[in-house]
Image (cartoon, rainbow, N blue to C red; front, side, top):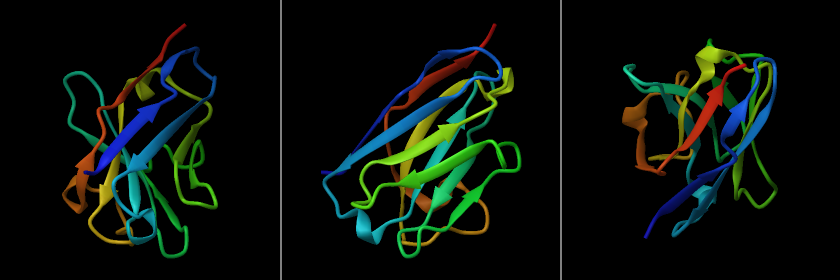
Length: 126
């Protein structure tokens, strides 16, 4: 059974940093790209980042490019999302997801992902 469990969310001031983690079980991460998504109240889900399984290449939404870094450890589990220079508009529930393939598309879209975690709340506020 595929399980994805996010952690690391919380309350942070604007300009601060957080690191989210996604622990996966029930499948071999060697064969799947992984992604992060977020959804703010009243807004559509947004693809934040993706990391391929094949070569570790990463893709980011324009809204987080240069501020967020997605990575995975040498054993490929867990995956991380380092979030720097956080803004109030980054406030959302963040979800980890498993891609259907080892590769990321040129943009991060939900239709490419088939398994989802329960999410972790990130609130950026002074």
